[in-house]
Image (cartoon, rainbow, N blue to C red; front, side):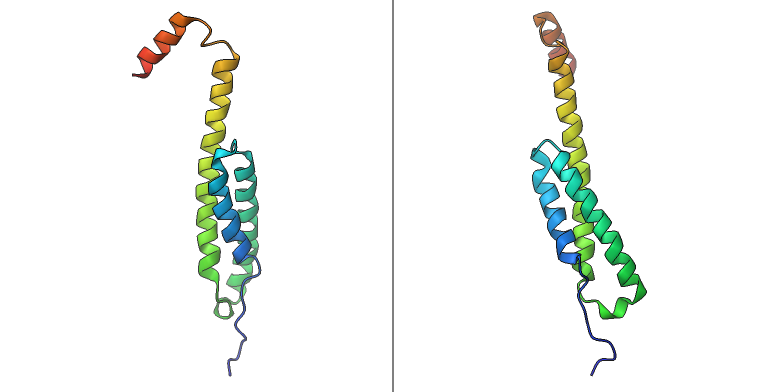
Length: 111
């Protein structure tokens, strides 16, 4: 018999799912994915503290760590998506592309 019963970390699956969905939602204007990533990171920190107290009794630390990495990737992708959307709104909302001459200059500078 084991001295300690092997257990699963309570939020490891949730962190993994939140990390996956945060990456998949980067096309949804950025905000939902950022929220999911932040929640995943908070849950990761709670389970990481629990794991550090007694690392020998938990079996699913790899899932927890994978979910954390996916949450970090998700937050980066979603922040980039959010910055892109804000930039597009600013460019089209301020009338940058109303003048055909400005539009031509913009594309000449971009290429």
